[in-house]
Amino acid sequence: MSIAIASIVMALLLGIAEKIGSRKRNFEQLDVKDGILMGLAQALALVPGVSRSGSTITGGLFMGLERATAAKFSFLLGLPAITLAGLVELKTLLDEGFGGVGLVPTIAGIISAIIFSYIAIAWLIKYLQTKDTWIFVWYRLAFGVFILVAIAGGVI
Image 1 (cartoon, rainbow, N blue to C red):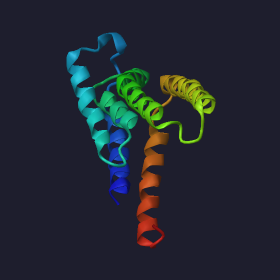
Image 2: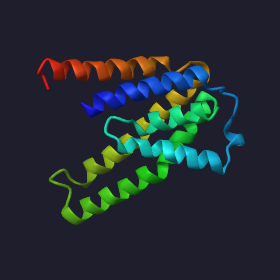
Image 3: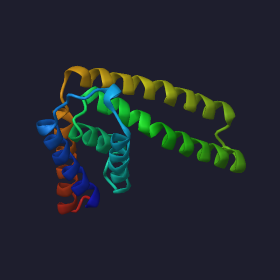
Image 4: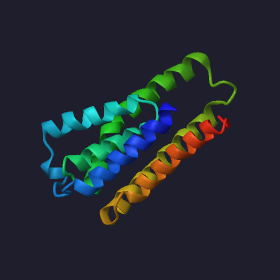
């Protein structure tokens, strides 16, 4: 239930940010205060159902950033955490073995993850240069409502 509620709340916050955000500031206009506020927005992802990138892009829009700038900042902010998490997982793999998968498939998976992550991020930034975030608002709302209906219907 908490994932559904978080999804709906974040959808509403993104919708509000889309509606009232000025979208006048670009990457060169970021300062330390923006970094702190974006870090606080990222901390919302500790709540189950809150997307790290979604919360930081929403936070960036509330801070008056252009959509694409908010997305770039969001993904750059995620690099240290993602890299550290990957290194921890790599250490676990090296310590415990590859779980029967092997080194070559693991390396192939890492390389494909890097390539397709880059493609997805580049696409999103390009998308946000010309389009708004309403499709993501509606998606998160539908997702949250779907979960609530499934819970109410005893499916999950």
